Image 1 (cartoon, rainbow, N blue to C red):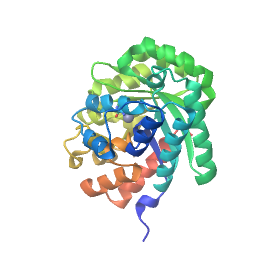
Image 2 (image 1 turned 45 degrees about the horizontal axis):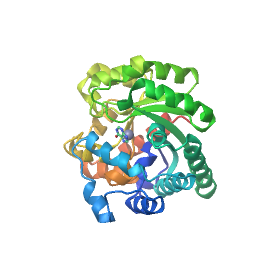
Image 3 (image 1 turned 30 degrees about the vertical axis):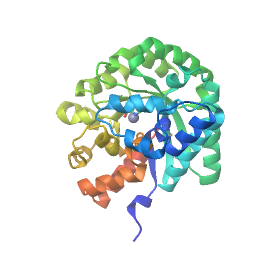
Image 4 (image 1 turned 135 degrees about the vertical axis):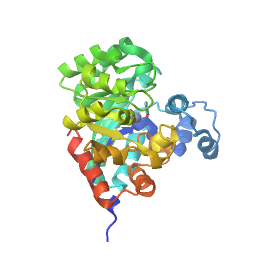
Length: 314
Ligand code: HPA
Ligand code: ZN
């Protein structure tokens, strides 16, 4: 009997910078003369222990500082798409953080050139399709996001939507109303991380103020029956990331993960890897973790995969 994990699926929540494996991090640091505090893969693995989203983000921004040239962005993207293909991901919508690269004086042209060439080569070599979704860093506020959005417009044809990520608590989605209005006028798809560490109220704001098409994470909606009804009625996709939630202590352990409750409520839940090199696995590792800990049935796993194909943007 074939393994259910071999079935085709879409991945809709993966940060390319979070797929930077320790080997590549060390290689690029040496090549680009970036001093990092780690000397070995073992030291890096030991540092990847987090108690919160912020502890992870501090290490994640340091890690991506080794990315400098078009070739680096190509290698990062191609390596991820190779892993995704091995997991029978047939289509992936990939996040990246333009402001984190602009802050290091890397031009968006360099970032897009490497990423788009890798997407094309992966399509030719594996048949996998990919799209890009730049995300804005909430901790930098809306003005900085608007400046980056302006620069991104020179590359409009290379991405399909925008997202919102980084530190959540203290940065409610409503603060980015103008940005999302502009993006909507550009016919971009809209997503936002909400309800990962933040409350259900942030998910309401993402829906009602930003008008998002999907919610990234959304764990907090379990506490709000009205919100669950709304998300179900509107067919809003939820891109959940179990191994990320476990590593960042969003759930005490995966026996408590909300996937089954949300599936039972009729929500279009999907399973994704978020930052696979930091959280211990790619798409199929996330499905497998839930099969192990929630004892998901084949029917439930099939539904999760079907949801990913239903709520993808292309
Ligand atoms: N949450 C917020 N920002 C992020 C994440 C996340 O899980 N991963 C990368 N940036
Ligand atoms: Zn994320």
